[in-house]
Length: 480
Image (cartoon, rainbow, N blue to C red; front, side, top):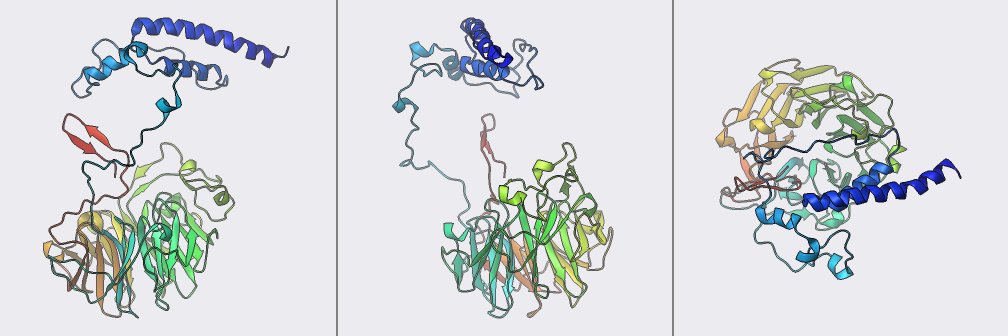
């Protein structure tokens, strides 16, 4: 008899002996989940010898969980746990159940008692189609791409009617965070930041729940977009993996990037917006500041690993390659690189420091005529303007902020050079606002596009996760 055969014969004996001992303990204690303990014992018996093993444990002293900051379960709940499942009719994991007992309850016909939701579009990015005199915005709340007349100007009590809306399951539009309009044909490029990992391209005539004319699989957490028409390249920031990937503009489906910028020396740290200077062949990237290191030489894999991604060149290293304990929060920044920068290349310049006033700098736009950078300063409720040649801890040339501006949590910004206008997507108040390019201080917008009347609050709900309930304060806690 081989060693493995002897072990297989020995395991059941040991297992049954342990179960018998634990069963007696359960009958005395009265408040232990037997099925959970059996599962734990079974797992322990099948662990490799070099795996972590349970050596010992200590029971908590009486009253250790009575602190008012950590409330226990209600009395009726604890009583149910200690009750005899056979007497009380409570199903036990060791008791046979019929298929009817184990079938999930049918809740399809039930309606919620109430809902917490924002019924109106929340604009996250903005672009202008100068040929057709249209404004294109992405709606990260209701998952739409909306097209408006550029000259629309809506009073506070009304809502702006879009000319066209693209949205629905076929569109693959969800958490759109960046948008680009092709100046030649009006095609709309929209970047998904979270759930679908897809860049979608629609023709100018697209509306309703229609399939994209083209789509490209992107790394998880893609946020900003810039397109170089001269070199026919499409550049994307990757938020979670602190990277910039470059595709051919005509890329489709599972095409791989042609360049990757990622690494500790790049100083990319939770990058969001990106702007392109075609004259000097530079890219400008806004960084929120959070970053972690990845293992050098690791196999490229996004946070959501797919077999097809593992075989792609220039795919960013993701969470699976993060070095534990390497995470840190740096001051927000703007980093500047040559357009063709790749690998772990250091930036040419960095704008960073308290004088900059940056607080979650998100969208960024470049005006080649004035050589200025316009930054949507999300948590600062402002637009910061810097010289494109700035470096270090420098103050903005001018700041657009104040109650008259209507700027609230701006996440998108666009320079309309044809009309000398600056457009801002305000995620915090249901508006897209237009100003003169030279506007500064507390200056009112020239025009306002609204998805809701001004008195409607913006909940700023973006991809909420599992909800917890604080029974002491009667509050819902929602990771957002």
